[in-house]
Image (cartoon, rainbow, N blue to C red; front, side):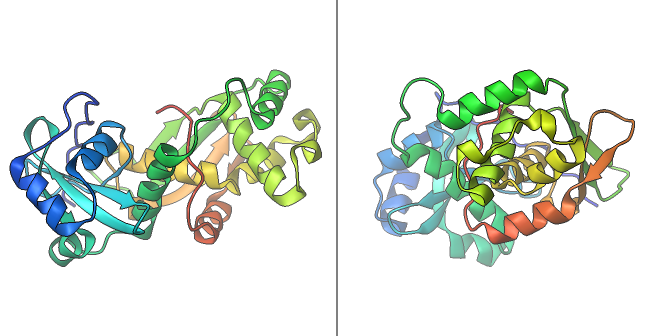
Length: 257
């Protein structure tokens, strides 16, 4: 299998639109070039799979006003050399996976949301209180299709408070409010791990981690949660996939890379 190199991250200071890019965005969308420039500088996009033997990077941007997608093509120093419609991109490079569309929409949602009030939200306060009582870190293992070109797993230790926010999200959705969230210390680890598997926020994070590590989502076999390399190890793959399928737009992710 061909190993694709990781694409460099966009610098928030270097995104710009070339003359040709300006002509194409005005031709293929209702947006101004300055809008696209700001969207790219703010990182409100999903990065598409790098094209073989290409020095260009393709990113997917969701236009909230028209509920459509654009594919800016980035050249040297992340300058926008042209802009494709989604149909033009797919005609040449194949269909864009639904999860990539979801990620681009989630990235834009963060940009168009009204600013939050200063200070922690009730959910964040509850998560911080629970985290004090449940300090033990968890390890998330993303197992991939075996290959001689890469490791067969990605192992990550998520931020403890962010993890608890994901657990709280499920309680709020299924139990009707933050006051319904019990003391997490009363929950056994397997029960909490399965709650994490039903979190839309966590599902979006998993998809993003796979792509950030230069892998493809179709190579993801399973997702496991543990306290370390010793049992118990909880497989949440089925829960996670059903959560992705039931959520048309994953909640924005706030856990750091």
